[in-house]
Length: 441
Ligand code: PA5
View (cartoon, rainbow, N blue to C red):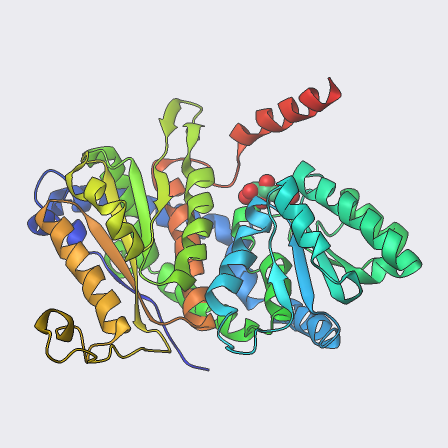
């Protein structure tokens, strides 16, 4: 297995690089260290007490083995796998597949994985009509077992499967849900549908390394062991007590301080690689739902939050970067850079007599996209805009596992530092209740 640790560069968050307005000074950082130390102690205490089981997921070899075995036994049977889930029950596996699932080119990898996610009638119906149900597996993923979007998609699918396959319909289903309770667990028992469990202590947005992410990943043939090994390496770094040598803590602390001391109410994750854009979607949920909170742990009203946005380099240089450069001083940019894209394309010297075109000849697209990222980073620095970079040596399972775990730790650390509960989401409940009321009417 190749060890491909993601490395982090925080230099452009500092005062002497981006100036006083948005840069963090040494005093500001060191002033926060006692509180950061307390946050570390708090996390370690809660981890030891079994209250933060997401930390332990990459060490559960037996569970990983069972998932791998089940997926292997289904090899060759499916042309398409549709994952029915939403939020934390979809964004993690979708990010894994987006980053790692297209490495086998061509022919297009089989099975094809689909994440309809939304209850958009046009898209959902179009997807179902284009599938050969005889060759399709549906993985229904809901931890609570009762999320309206997922349950209604399941009902539609179930009826179509039943219509076409009669009593063979259950063979085309596998559930991922709570190990004991909930609607889906009941159905799995009643109808003998295989079901994988999600640790009840692991919230949806921290569940990518449970069966939620691992089962679709295994069905797509991804390297689960490398993914978990990457996450374990991130855990090794992510439990170092010294913030300055702990990338996860440094990420969480810097972003919290930039929000509170410099007014950076927005963090933009901007990968310079299309394959990594799903990670930015996954991060948006993690950071928003975990830290966007009305109350702190003492019950005081704080209305804390930092809006996570996503942008794609170099595409959004022609759409968003004007705003980042000259708009309000309210953002920090988190670049994702890739050292080795696995494939490169040489730009040909097609017009040697035309200097303006010949200038590009002989370079490669990888050189160009990296030069664009570094130029944007430097331009932002000169404009006094803070940024940080996660450097992926390559886009492989180890690096992706490393990145995911680093940001999960960063999020719980930021919660502990800010005295916010990052594991609940009381703000989404009212919308659910009102949706049901609207349908009752
Ligand atoms: O992070 C979370 O807890 C949420 O985003 C959930 O994952 C999402 O609401 C889906 O919930 P469930 O898995 O219960 O269907």
